[in-house]
Image 1: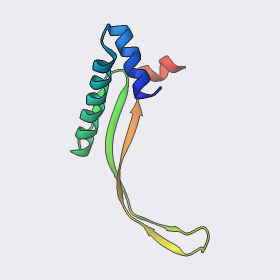
Image 2 (image 1 turned 180 degrees about the horizontal axis):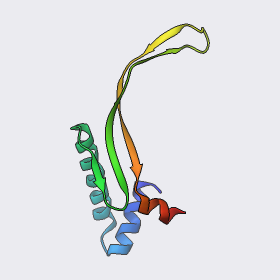
Image 3 (image 1 turned 135 degrees about the vertical axis):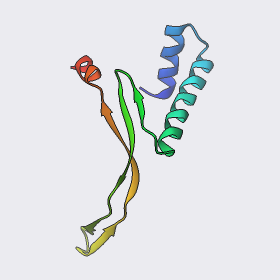
Length: 90
């Protein structure tokens, strides 16, 4: 499902204008991203938890030249699905 499709479904189910529901969805995702950027986790009941993490730097290798390379640490996001959502999907 795309953001546009999500907005359309929200508009239908909540009796909103599609443009309004699209703006709400956009703002929701922006707020989640902003919290993660600030190093905060985002918990959504019965859905899951978005958590910012920093991976450790590590040594890898170039598969073509076989030479060792240093893979730097980086910031990323981890998502843990709630137990309720897992049960719903099963």
